[in-house]
Length: 530
Ligand code: GLA
Image 1 (tube, rainbow, N blue to C red):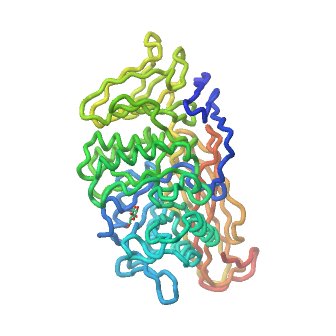
Image 2: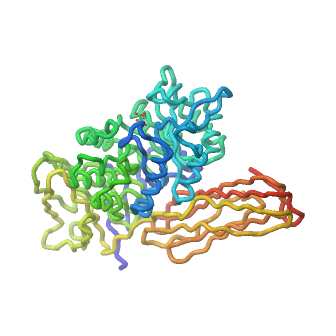
């Protein structure tokens, strides 16, 4: 359907979407964005982290592997959740040589082995450390004065995401400390999502976009194992106010999710999840994925709501109006020219609430379609209603809507890989050529252009990308001619432009390993290791 898309004039005056193209109209200088170089976290990172449910115990290799398995079997991976790994899980110590070493009693495969397990499942590896001398419980060493060697070690363990806490940092300058860690990550030459965790201390929303990809805005959302709705509501209120700081590659982080933890009702789970998506928050599940009800799975994997969070424009929604315990959330233009709207009833009884298209910046005379993202139903807005929409919202619940001039409600790209590592072993001195594949699916509705492979592949590797509908296959061809016996490794980066919004997609990275068991005879190509 070709229709003129809505014209938004939002209350902030920060964004205007005219005939489908959203342009920044702010006069403020563009902030420096760390992600401009590495292309990571262009939409909020999604995954799972242990702290909300487990605290320190029983974090160990078995738990993390079981959770990784559950991410796949429950369908969460297919909904875009990817980052997983230990939080403050007593996973390393510092040896006499000053270098980090895995706590093998808890992680017998080593932290590199755990990373390999996670990558082979098409998931991404998250690790944790602290910017101070020790982590919060003092059970693990912090990175202070060891920034370079620790970030190198994390790269050797093949971390894709590093959460860096702010405990035991007396006397440290927060901007300098996190900047030093960023520089150490760059020097270690592995692109990682840098997740700052100072709980709002040092107002990271003012400076951390240049240093990392996301920053905690508040204190912990709960004590381990105890979902706390009151605390979640306080965090919601604090994080909402920071909406101007978020955008592709730089996100406010109101902490891991409590949806699905014991003690929360279905409506609270639904409301919580919708609110986190409306705030373009990182979606790190915090519940025990091994024992989820169907209702929890349905909530955490609702792609229509995830679409709001993973929208390529990356605008954080905010409260437009509050009446008593009911809030109207908007300021969330989406990549297709539609916009997301939420009505949240925080009170103990059902509430009736009315709003107008005009207050959302939509022409009340326009023909619009209203999609209910939880009921999965679309209706046409009646002309006789003159742009007014009246709803009743049950207690602790939300109405999550998407309003468009089109009856189509496309889902933005949600990438799902079958693996993030491909390994080869070559025997004998004769030159050989072998290939191995990685397949990247897209649960969104649009087909992407072919992924473009970054420059600088080693001479022993070539990569060809082919497309079959929304699935793309990366065929990695290895040629061993002229290579010396040894282990070779490289990281492949691929980039893409999301076709509807025209925004760069989050860059895609995967590891390629090659073991050559004997010196190989001459032929084209030369020996090279990174
Ligand atoms: C802090 C962080 C939590 C968790 C714990 C670990 O409190 O905010 O998310 O990482 O440390 O001790």
